[in-house]
Image 1 (cartoon, rainbow, N blue to C red):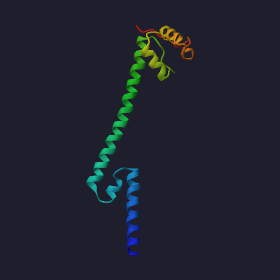
Image 2: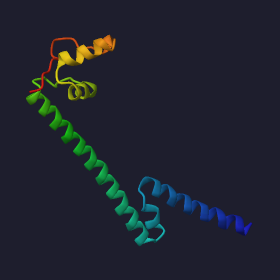
Image 3: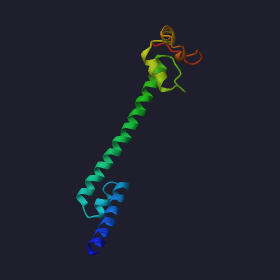
Image 4: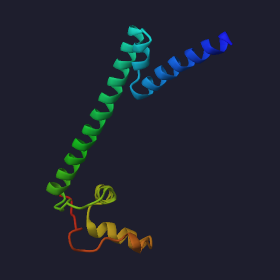
Length: 122
């Protein structure tokens, strides 16, 4: 009986610490008095968030750069264009070349219609 009450007290404290660490890694360790371990978790979590945010920002800058480059050098309006259009734009020298190759491959569903989709690299 005494062992049972001791174990339930340990489990509730441990469960609380686990839940806190689930919310913010290191918080449970801090509550249990492990400041050094908690600081290590806080630093790792902050580093992961910084890498995630930095990667997202870098991807957005890269996308902005290649879209601006295409508008200047391929004479195309990139507004309302999806990623696949950007990939095709990068692989073919012109709108007519892209359509001609896809017509030969019998991929008529992938053809672009005129009216804002034309490009020609300089």
